[in-house]
Image (cartoon, rainbow, N blue to C red; front, side, top):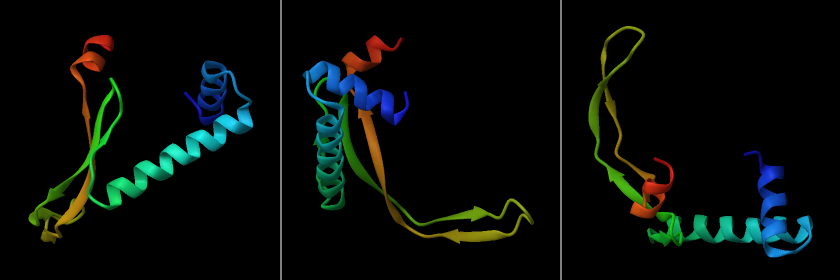
Length: 90
């Protein structure tokens, strides 16, 4: 689904104009981003949860020459799908 299709679908579901739907979507995304930056988990109704996970530093290989490299530790976003969503997309 493309961004415009998503915006149109939200507008139709909420019975609002597409411009208003775009503002709602932007507000939701900004709120989710802020929460993730603060390390909070974000529940997404029956879809699942968004959160972050700490990835430890590790050794890896450069695919071009095979030399060993050090990969730094980092924080990454993570989505955990609900059982309901898993059943729907089977």
